[in-house]
Image 1 (cartoon, rainbow, N blue to C red):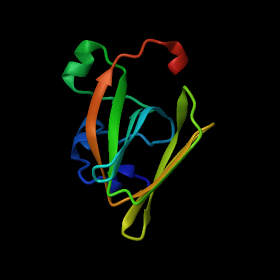
Image 2: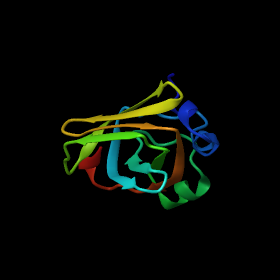
Image 3: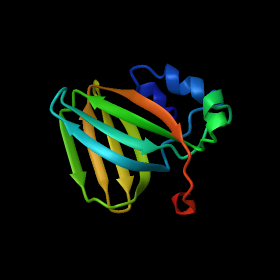
Length: 135
């Protein structure tokens, strides 16, 4: 599947911000991975690799240039995290595994793999990133 939002429980919000097409997850900067006993669930907070060409008015007024998403995997039956680094820039690949969803994060020194019942976006926000090293 080319459109990763097909794996989301409700892709409407992100598709409404990216009317021209949701960017792929091939260049995301991961800021946080949280393992939660409830669900059990895993949340990933990351910046998308592209900004919307038609962002919400308030994002334009604020001068925002980055979209950050918190993706939550619920009903996690397996998780494996290998390596950690201070700057995790990589790709996220989603695929079906039976009735479940497989998520794999690949970065230079970090790999995360998990199997979950479903995925949803808990938060989607925008901010202004000024550090040119982050591009």
